Length: 210
Image (cartoon, rainbow, N blue to C red; front, top):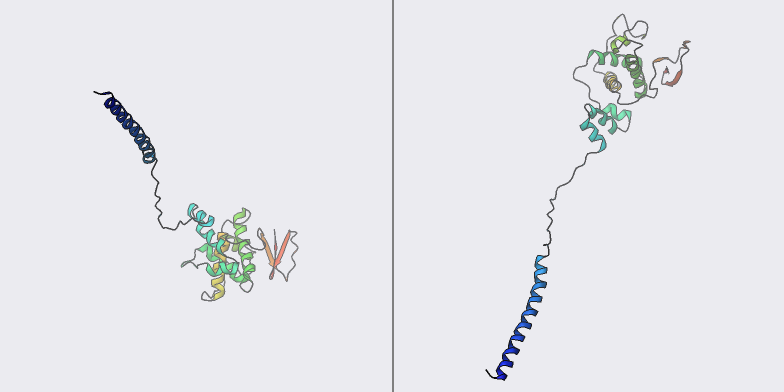
């Protein structure tokens, strides 16, 4: 082999080697690019997320709390009374409580009616009086409308009776505080008994005491 041919062959091999190196460097960059984690495509489902309000959460988690939630939604006692459903059948206890509200305060404001109802509830829960509403109402010498062990006839179709029933239900379940919450006694404002009890306030035609 001639010297020129040897040089030509050596030059050709060197050129091929350099080209291979350059090609490998480029391939390595491409490999890095290919090995880079592919972009993640997020898929979003168009669906509203409903989160319960605190009142709804309590109503779901606590037995009987649905009624409390209903009360919490009312802006006024009048609104709560309007929204309160009258039971298809009244229990004896609710009948006694509603009767007392009806005869003692049917001509008064809703606050005055509730105040009377809550006194009866407070007495029944106090341990100092009979433990039932009927026991409290029919306790001797407590309510002037009681005749023996009964009440006068009630016009059950009247709006006054329907309101009294709703007030009794609200008082029984403690859905709204009366303006004299905690009172245990009351009397008509036109009389002045010497009870020696702590006066709370007057509501309509009654004065309430602890």
